[in-house]
Structures are given as C-alpha cells and as structure tokens.
Length: 257
Image (tube, rainbow, N blue to C red; front, side):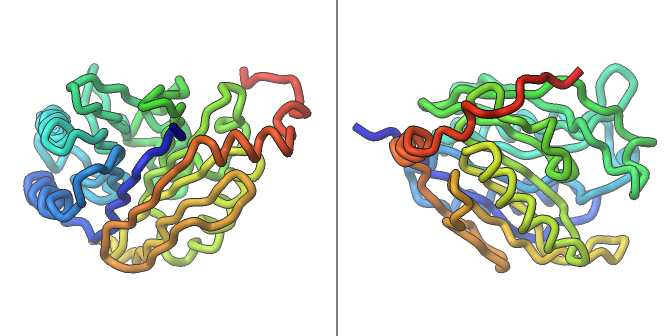
C-alpha cells in the first residue's frame, strides 16, 4: 500500500504575548480537524506572535506549551509541530517542537535568526539540523528566515518533506511564495509552509499564503484565509518523480562547515 501523510496547516491570527489564550485558540482550531490527520502544523511563535521581548511572559510558558502539545498530539493521534520562545540554560531560543502522539518529541532551534528585527540579540542561534522519521517519511522542519538560506536546507539526508513554520509579513510575501517553490524544486522534495494572518502589536500585517509544493514545484495547496488547510502527501509520487528525474544524484559534493 502506498504510504501517505495527511497534513493539516492551521493558518490563523495570534494573540500578542498571551500563551494561555493562544493555546486555547489553537485547541479550538484543532477540534475542527477531521480525524485521520497525521501532522498538525502551527505557525512560528504560535503562543506569542513574533516577539523580541519573550521575557514579557513567564519563563515557564515554554514547558507549559510543550505539555499542551503532548496532550493535543495524544488526543488527536497526530504529531503537533510549531515554534515558541523557549527559555533554557539562561537564554531564549526560537524553538520548534515536533511532538509525536506517543509523547516523544524532537526539537530544532532556529539557525538563522532574523537580524533585521534584532532576533539575534534576543534568541540564541541553533546549530543542528533536524530530520525526523515519522510514519515512513523523513521530515526536515525549519523556521521562517531559514527559508532564505538554501545551503542549510540542502537535501543531503534524503528527506521527503521540507516544512517551514513562519511569521512572514505581507511586504515580503512574494519572496515567501517564490522560495517555498524553489526549495521544493532544488531539493526534489515536498515543501510545506505555514504562515499566520492578521496584524501584530508592531503593526506588521500577515496575509498567510500557507502552501504545499511537490518535488517539481507544482502547487498542491494554498490559502489566504483563516482556516485549516488540508493536504495529502504521497510517498509513491515522490519516488516516481525522483526515479524519473535523478537530479539529486548530480548535486555538488560539499558539506556546510
């Protein structure tokens, strides 16, 4: 039987620096997802918005949100993915959690902090790429600004899915659209991006454009609305494309130092 993955992207507005309210809001959204989803993906910093003042909320909120993600993953029998400001070892990171239904979790700290907003002054940069084996798929989750740096996401691990969570504002949304498609094509992988909508307290506007592209760059899903965007990823389609077009075999032989 062909392996497939049912993915639900939650594209919505966020409550500024209010983790409890955002957790309750996303619980409501998750309850609307039909049973059978394998992955539920939330935006970047889904408990606060893209804040440069994480100390405005309790340092314990990161652990509370991780426990909430474990509960939602267990309840829905789906992996729950999203990033939050996380405090550990006397520093903050923009940390993505990939929480499985059995309670196991993996995390990735954002490599490329957004210097234009001063993110590098508030959050420590991550050093390790994450690839998760889940239900027969190898998934590489990344965060927002990482999308602009193709060497970091270069497909040397033979992953099947690139997954970006973001707070990507309207003025640069054309770059988001273009780069998601480019990352899919150059890595011969599905590329999924989930963005937020609405305005934040800094008056930045977000218009969504959550989307999924296949390994040839064909758009499989797209939205600008407040909604749950659903798609099905098929392993056989990816294998067929990679077998016919063996572009990854011709990639340059170098590694990131």
